[in-house]
Image (cartoon, rainbow, N blue to C red; front, side):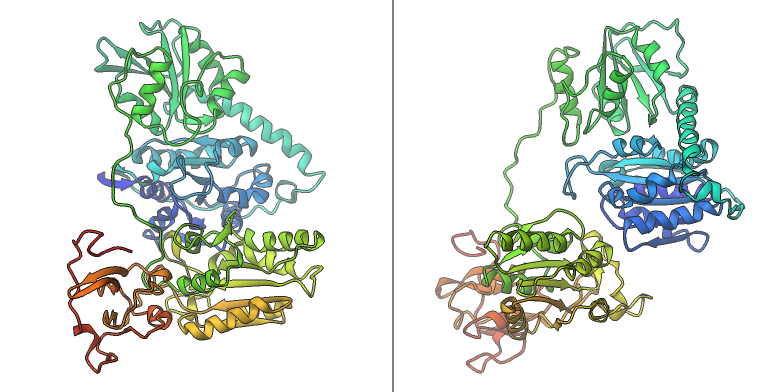
Length: 639
């Protein structure tokens, strides 16, 4: 046995491997992106893929499970929404091979559009839900999940929050379990989910959950921890709970996952019941235990899921009365809640206040091909409907361009709905929808096809597909077009050919780094009365490591108009130069990747590639010395 430091994602991947897992699929989305990346390290013993969307990923896992193989499917919390259609039926079928669905939850919305709590969906789908709080538990619970799945005949959800996914802890590595697969049984009554086959499956599904509920209290993943004396010593009593047990404390806190460890830091005068499985709950064991306490508190992030389950079964408790329903519950927030509940007399931890830091604006990477497109759209002052991807940053200052962001692929349907409503109200206006290639393949193609249904020939609609060959925001995973940018990928789908096959007559391809040509083309399509599609072609500079000779500014020519700054490129700032009173633009050579957009938007040709001759015949890089970057905002470095 070897002990290694792992993130929760890496540990769950290790659990999959040790459990004899064979097939893993996913769609990239924080906080679970690295999980599948970690599974890939165990290739060729296992198969791993990033599928085109979460529904397809789930179906790949279902197919593997049908053959008797252990399968793991991972996605972020909102991705489960996309997979719900097959999931809700799959939970009715018997399990051939253990099936684990990893849901990455995001309390505090570090990288998500909402805080959806998938414990609710897990219960809705009649799944067992395991809630690890450390890397070791992530591995152990993953392995347990496969066993539970096969023993009880149901899919199991492994719910991991962002902090568990990304934080590191010691993990024991064990040998891989060698498993043979049974092969597909080919029994239509088990897997052909149409009436009358589905009716008996409903009762079988109900019996599985009832059996799981009855037997859960005997597992060592649920335990009671009693704090004795001054609180520095602890005694663990595994369930089932001794009915003769009497605690010196008046308060019992029921919790799970990471919050158990946050709570322990307080050494509060309470007893703790830590749940490893949060659905179904060991209700009768908890009912018996709760009778010995004057106060039962439930500590959980997001929705009052455990609290509501207890109250439904008549167990008196409180939770969200004292603890926030949103965001992460760190130790100081837990302590504040315990003070409100009368458990603690006063708080020792101070809630972190706002820290005076240098303001940072959100911006695209240097050389990002999205920047010139949004620069062109902003200058045209047109309504732009956004989607999920790197280009979502355009909703923020300084671009402040996107008017809506809802979910993956939603932009196209929203544009159509807006167009129809405005037209019927006599307020028709040109509309633009933007979507990336990864999102287009994920869920945009169906919305695009629907544009052709009852299309108003006079509706001024422009769909811009930002094809950069990567799912960039989640770490640069490949898409179906990546094969056109690298030989290291096996898919090279032509979006224009696909669109033409779908029936779109007006599809235009532009190189956005030919700024003037792209501007003319996009503006022509914006004025076109009808539906048109524009696809851009430049790849992600970061993912494909694109770097050309950098650009420099001639401050003697620069008029300080900030046209280059407004392209929102990180290397460009306004600075003071020796001998020149007015602030002029400057380009950091260490950041510049040579995309040339700043040079093309400059109205006075003050920007040129390093080594090229400036207007005075001298090399632009040696014309004037810029002031050091540590000057005050009044002197330089001002954006």
